[in-house]
Amino acid sequence: MTDPERGATAGAGPDGIPDAGAGPHRPVAPVPPESGILGRAIGRVGMVFAVGFVVSMAILIMEIVLRYGFNAPTLWAHETTIFICAINFAFGGLYCAAKNRHIRVVLIYDAVGPRTRRALDVAISLVSAVASGFFAYAGWLMVERATMRPDGSFRLEGTGSAWNPPTPALTKVFLFVVLILLCVQFLILAVNYARRRV
Image (cartoon, rainbow, N blue to C red):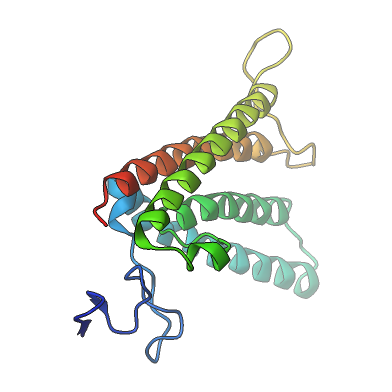
């Protein structure tokens, strides 16, 4: 059902995104058109990372049963769940940006008109893109240390445990890629906000 004055779905906020409390079930916020193709792709991939939390929970339950029920703990359960949760949280920031659901202070934003709001959207997106770029550079420095020996040869940093998987290096590489995508996503948002008709 559409509100004729706002041009938005009933139960949706002013930006067309459904309110959290609307309807009997909490709806999933759609990807706004300003996020572009990249945002839609990120929105689709999000379910894979959501399943990752379920997988990590299942691994921990299995570890508890093996450890306390059969006195046969694994070497890999804890480090695997830490890795899965780490990349899920890293992806979560990108997912929120693509869906325009990140935390914002709306005291000023909600009090201004549509033209000023559009200017704020552009400015916020550009500042966020620059910040993401700086973080991506810092992430690259971490990736260099985690993937290369001092002599320049390739190696992946391990955990140093008995299992010693290369998850620290893989986590840093994943974070670096996410930060690059986050920078690009904010630039796409800035351009599309600037082009949006008020």
